[in-house]
Image (tube, rainbow, N blue to C red; front, side):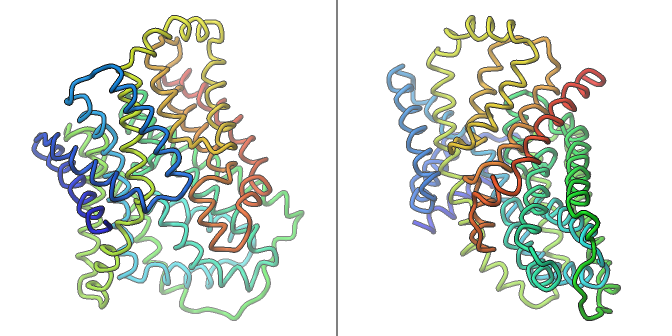
Length: 453
């Protein structure tokens, strides 16, 4: 089953690329690949994702069956969100050049030689997680743990809390602008905006959020900024070039997507897949003379592709549900009521939706689900609010949800790796910042829309 899953994911990527580069449509082949990923990937899913996938699959299939819709609509339903699967799978390939080139060890060496205070270590950890997440997605969590754990254990007394706060915020804030972020892809899909329209305000908000996080940590330390001493490191000076190299990769990723968008190459998700795969390939080939290439590629085939085991079946099921809901006529029937409520609430309706996205995550309702649902609802009403404000509000609600819910995959992985409860990370150490970010982010969304919308 694992081999079938891997082949299905590869087929989804190849078909996505064919559509982006040559305008070819292989909808039935994509349908077969999507069903293959659903069936073969289901045993690989965590229990939470399995339950959600079953619910949405049953509801979506039920609506399509009840409506007596043709097979062509079933095909469109099963393939409607495979673009998200392709993005997540391609982002995993960046782990190959990072491993071959020893970039993890280089960052650690540079850090140990340069950072002397807790505040500088906190912001460096936040930024490193942020940048790695922009192209590694969830794969950045084990990388940052392995990079920072030895140093933090030796130099920060309450290192688990310190690490969790910095890395959680760095990770989550990347979803506001990163081309490979699933949340942002869903927001773009829901609002009909291009990625470039959301990039600049999202990027600025992410860095404002990281700055606010750093300031709260600085104020909360009550002036106790000194780290425990360690032996001097002279290697850090020699490794700065690789740190800059990683920054260059992120900048190249963004630039390549902007160029593809200006050239009108494919759709937004297709450009992300093409840019990510091209950059990962070039980066890997540049490391070809280093030892370990073959081993890294084998590891990626055996393990890397399986890392989308939760995501792939879930989004096939979500696509079936989303299309079934759209075809059922329920939203059209409810549109007058939704419009009346939206007119009565006005701008508050967007604030309410962002708050609901964050609040429902506490009971396990994933932001992926709520963003898709509210995106569908908002498509049936005409609000006198700029689309960019709606997009930013959805993004802010999703980001706040990721920080505050113990059910987020990133937080569950982190809790397992550093040996603390997921509830401690989400509710114990991040809830205040999450709520403050939600409030400040919504103010920012409306201000940006008023000025530039």
